View 1 (tube, rainbow, N blue to C red):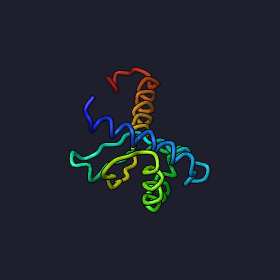
View 2 (cartoon, rainbow, N blue to C red):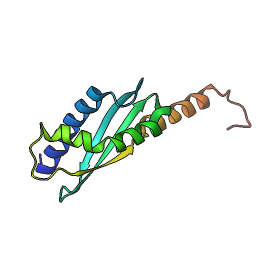
View 3 (cartoon, rainbow, N blue to C red):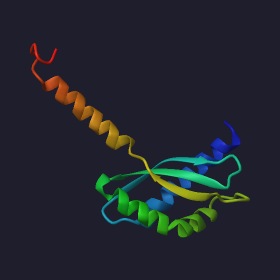
View 4 (spheres, rainbow, N blue to C red):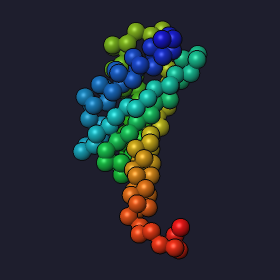
Length: 117
């Protein structure tokens, strides 16, 4: 495993723990889905999902506003010479997968007729 991959995994693990412990958004379950540091470690794209997903915008604003607090909490546990600047991004993978599943289900429910063949 490459050094950058180990750093990505380490930041993801610690960030997930801190985000859940801090409870930034009431009545929401936030999951850090991936961390992707740039090769120079100056920035890291952090993708997250949230349930219910209608709180995505609120969660993005809260995470962005709390970035310095989260970085300081992570620095206590992760020893890096340079802590990357966190860039937050909502991970809509689950939302898109659900849309596809509903579409497939609706196709399977349609009766087969000459018109839709």
